[in-house]
Structures are given as structure tokens and as C-alpha cells.
Length: 295
Image (cartoon, rainbow, N blue to C red; front, side, top):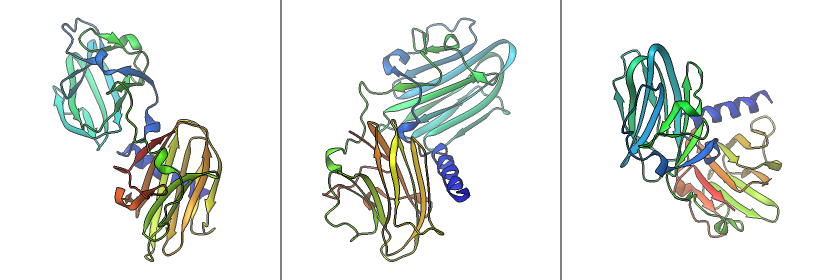
């Protein structure tokens, strides 16, 4: 049990460092149009100002007459690019992962912040904004040219009119015809539920992964795990595992009551290439890893 909990903690930490599944988009959703255009005036209001200008996203904050601390994090299902500081002091901290920005700053008076771009594959970006260590109120968050208020904090800015998940629902039906012939992961659905199996082609490798849902997992089982070498941990919305696998086949089986699943599949601690993931009877590969399916 101790090892299983350690695996879950490690995989969650990995997700925070740049592997961000769709299940991470907690918070009310906001359409992109409400954040378009730089505010015509900032006035003297303290708080956050967020807007988009073409492909660029801008985050600024103002403290007013007294020193205040600003911090938070931004995550996306795409890739963050071209992060640029804007009038930040040398002591302010800002860090960028492949899909995460984290910052901490102390400010008085004028405006500070940063700008960034997102890859075209991104469907959403999530903001969690702090002022003096607390979640900023909705009236302290101003969006776009019209300075619309955020409906909540955290909130998710939807980049398209409708989400564009990798919809593999039909392609998941049935076990791949060449099951176990190729090293990698096999993912499919049948009347017994969802299955994720893996084999490493005779070479001992460490297979680990994370599955999240917007619903609830049940009937979660490990398949052919070695009791003293392999481990799995799960709760209502997360399944995590780690095994050492060579010629044999290990796996997990589950049922789910949600509408979305996100899979993050690793080999020796690194993301498995999408070409090593086989879906459904045809054995098609997803466009990327992590990937999301809906049903």
C-alpha cells in the first residue's frame, strides 16, 4: 500500500510538471470571445487583467497603493510557447513547463505580468489566480476589452466553440487483432468494460501510467500483476500503476460512469510514443500521448 501511494503521488507530480490530462480542467468554462482585446482602460482597480491578442495571451496584475502578493498557475491541454516577462522585478518567480506556468510576485503600484502563446492543438487553458495567498474574487479578475468578470476562480478559457477531444469511442471497440504481437500498450472496450494491457517484447521495462475521468471508476482490477513487484492505486476519479514487464502481459480493467477518459502511458518513466499505443480491434494509434476519449 505504501508503494502504491508513492506511485500515485509521483504520477500526479508528473502531471503537474507538464502532462495535463483533460480531467485537470476543473472550474467554470468561459468562451474565448469574452477575453478578446486589450482593455481600453485599466483604471485604478487592483486585481488581474487577462486578454488575448491574436495568438498571444496576456496576464497582468495591479496592486494599487500597497504591496500585495500575486501568484497562481496556468495549465493547458496543449503546449505553452514563447513566455515573455512584462515589467517583473528580478525577485519575482515565473516558471514554465511544457503545459504549465507558475508564478509568484510582490507588487506595488503599476502593472506587471507576462505573455505567452499556445500550440494550435490546445482546446482549453485553465487559470488559478491568487492575491495575498487567497483565491482572487471574481470582481478582481477582468477579462478582455470589456473587462468582463470571471464567473469563478479557477476558470477554464475554452479556445474553441466546442471541445475537440480525440474521439476514439468507436475505434475502441474490440481487442486489437494483433494483440500481444507488438511491444507497447493495448487499449480497448468490450462488454467487460475498458482494458489497458501492455507488453515489452521480451525486454524488462518499467510500465506506469495514469487514467483520469470526469465521472467515477468502479470494478477496477489489476491483470496479472506480480504481488511483490507491481502495484496499482485508484480512487473514484484516478487509476495509477507501476509494473516491471518483459515477455508477459500486465494490465488494468475497469468500468466507468463518466463521459471522458484521459490516458497517460509511460515506459521507463517517459511518455510512450503514440505509435506504441494500439486502440480497438484495428489497433490504430492516437495522435498523441496523453490522449482523451469520449463516449
